[in-house]
Image (cartoon, rainbow, N blue to C red; front, top):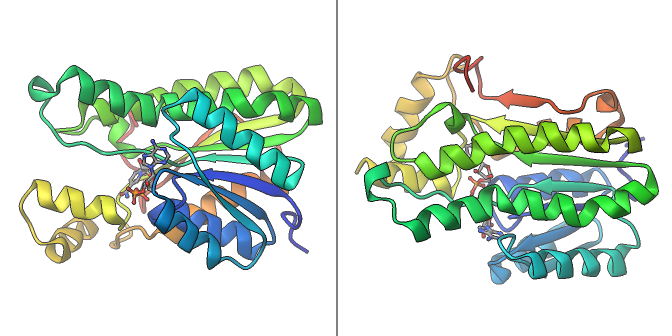
Amino acid sequence: VSTLVGKTAIVTGASRGIGAAIVRRLSDDGCQVVLADIEMDATEETADSLSSPAVAVECDVASSASVNAMIEVARREFGTINFLVNNAAILRNNYLVNICDEEWERVLAVNLGGPFRCIRAVSPLMVEQRAGRIVTVASGSSAGMIGQAHYASSKAGVYGLTKTAALELARYSITVNAVSPGFVVTDMTQQLADRVRQDVGPYIEEAAAAIPLRRAGQPEDIAGAVRFLLGDDASFMTGQVLNVRGGPGPAAS
Ligand SMILES: NC(=O)c1ccc[n+]([C@@H]2O[C@H](COP(=O)([O-])OP(=O)(O)OC[C@H]3O[C@@H](n4cnc5c(N)ncnc54)[C@H](O)[C@@H]3O)[C@@H](O)[C@H]2O)c1
């Protein structure tokens, strides 16, 4: 019997890609899911395709008011929140010297501020419950990536946020971990291929050749790792960053 049956999970950035794979996996395992995203048409479509109760909620993780309202809707809908998965993020490609303040601030506000706001909003309830699981999606780019000073910095920040939240919440039996993907085929991949003016097919093949397991990651690979961290088998793990990259990856990341 799955340990997720009847539990409630919030997943941000759930409309497509890795977020959609995460909600599909959690839903298949019996979880009730709150899909929080800014693109409502796609999010509702994903919510409608799930096998267990699900609700799509419009939420911009860069706004505290929006995050707090989303948490309220989740509580009203399902009564409790057992899991928070911080997956929403945006990618911008630009050399550091060309990044304007606005672009820098938006990437940090969504990718690092988003997980911060969601953890802050959900933890009082988890503290009350003396139980909860939080997983944030990081990225191998935190080791350094040309054209991604803001993105890499935001994802490196997720490490500090995860470890600190883990320390502060451990006494309430709440675990806080991160999953750090390498190359995963999603809409973001198209953006990366466009940046180097390459067709997406050959771009994926080249990337796969550089991965020790010789294939690109799929959203389901990340969903499986998130599922593990939310399950009972991971109950003694907190403050960890699980690399899911088809290889060990650079030591510094
Ligand atoms: N695809 C990869 O190769 C890769 C590699 C490493 C890490 N990641 C990370 O995995 C996660 C998912 O990436 P993906 O490839 O599925 O991306 P994606 O662009 O396909 O999906 C991102 C989702 O987040 C939503 N979103 C964007 N801004 C938001 C906001 N302000 N508030 C709420 N939702 C918002 C989008 O609408 C979308 O549903 C991200 O955290 C990303 O950084 C991806």
